[in-house]
Length: 186
Image (cartoon, rainbow, N blue to C red; front, side, top):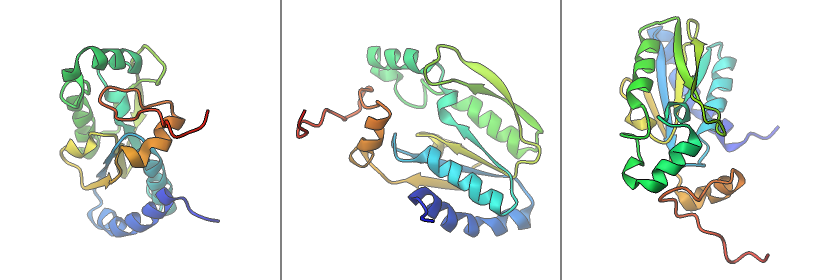
């Protein structure tokens, strides 16, 4: 069975940090950041699977759930006001930082936001983290978080991620240089 690139990365990185988790017996937070479409979510899932093979429970927090507005409203706001774009206004960085801090402090549960992509509503859900050894926070701006024990940055630019953004019908976002590929025959 051939491994995808995300699984290969997990097989390399997880063995490097597993002893740290075992020896310290402390909870570990990992951030996975990078350009839209670079594979942050898939990498986080691969990390969870690899940690499970090592008998460690891991969970993922997606930064997309910490936006201050649901996706459609957020996109409208970005287009109306370019200053809205970025982690300081459109993302509730304080809340994700507080949830991360609760995890590291040993809380048994945290209440996290949940925003389905095509929803106009921000719900909340209870996340059980009592037996979770590793919390993986993935999203474009997660490298800005404090108290992260390992930071992973996927080095890809908009040209590298074009195919994946097109598959997700992304690319018409504010400041996104994705333009129609005029070289294709229609």
